[in-house]
Length: 121
Image (cartoon, rainbow, N blue to C red; front, side):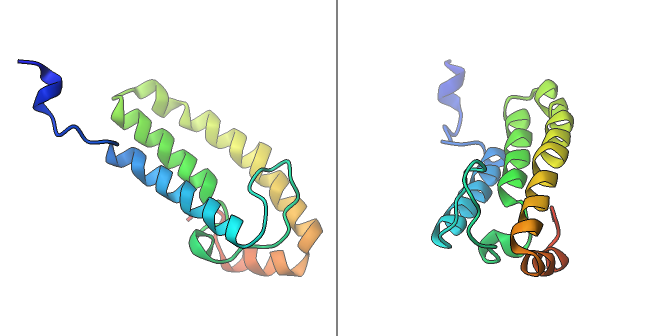
């Protein structure tokens, strides 16, 4: 018997789906607010709706969840181990710089948002 025929034939593994849903929701929210998603373009506003009500970094959080989902889906410990260096690079090489930029650009508006919403969860 063919092993692939004896499965549910799901279109996506649920652990991976969570990361993609979080990322997609964050991108839609930023775009609807009229700001830019790519980090090489200027941020035009502080977005406080959608997933940004719960975390200041939903796209990166979705990436972490996606990487965990891939590791689970492929039953691959090496992918899971990549989470540590990936998290360090994102936290200190990306998020820290973005936070400094947003504070310079938006001042008290960003500081208020930062005081109300956690960096991750």
